[in-house]
Image (tube, rainbow, N blue to C red):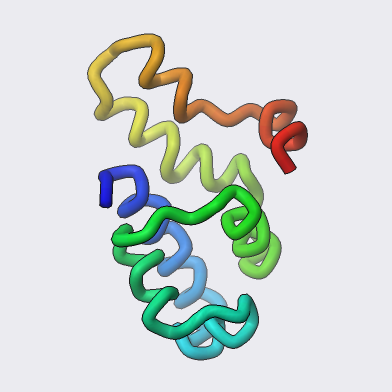
Length: 99
């Protein structure tokens, strides 16, 4: 568990609640257990890029939304070292190449 996993999990938990979906309903949609949803939302398990992309589609969010709400605030808190900052920057081109 790390700070970034916690922030990403919270982002999706908030999005799920905005859509008025229960953890059980989301679990059924993406074919995982309700416990796994809880682990993701609490930052105990990391999400793959493909899962993040799937959740963004389900919640009608974009990679820019994720970047704005999670990644950019995470980068502000990480000590100013180029390698760490670069590790967590996502640009549209980079993400589309990964998907």
